[in-house]
Figure (cartoon, rainbow, N blue to C red):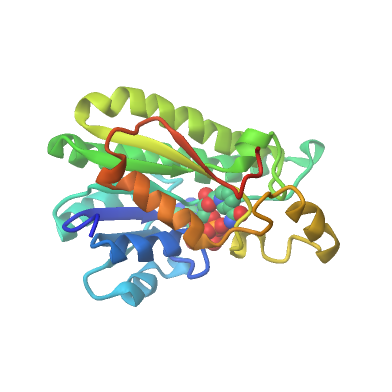
Length: 248
Ligand code: NAD
């Protein structure tokens, strides 16, 4: 197993149909003890229980710095260490540029970008003390295309911000033995986009994807496990595109 004795935190990991839970499941299958962080309404404890009794669910709001710090502290108290952080929590809104309000902007950037910063800050003391760690940030193809299939321009901006933040952290934390990498998923079938794609748009979307299918959460999860694991031990600051070839 790739991750025996490792402790992995994943934000936004409680949605059973989401990328986060698929990743939690795959991290656990590779031997990691998983700590699922999510909002109370998403029931992180219930999701962790589905993985097995050794896994932990904690209520945390990644937009709140104190909440992130409490969650990291609780993870260390309960599991002894933090080896892996997956910054996965995110929200999107279908909007045109002219329609984005200040509240929309704050909501979307706060979860993806502020959340990635706060959670990375929160795990840093534990990773620095261990002189090792792996942080994987979930960005999006929307950052690269300059427009999502479903998300608004503020979502593209948030996810582009994640790419910049992750590279800057990779540069800064390398000396501490901490790697930071990103994944840019394409269109993946989860609750975030459920019901947002009208049937008459689907063929047009598939025509842009050389592998000719929408991604599954496990397609992303496998790549997160790779970046989190020692298989990627000389990779930092990279972005792994997981999009069926959408950008070729
Ligand atoms: P999802 O809606 O199923 O999962 C998002 C999770 O984040 C939920 O469990 C939600 O409760 C949690 N969350 C929201 N706000 C939070 C907060 N303030 N604090 C803690 N948790 C919070 O969506 P998903 O498709 O599984 O998305 C996972 C990640 O992948 C997101 O960052 C998303 O932007 C990104 N992504 C998804 C796709 C796709 O097509 N599904 C494509 C590219 C990127």
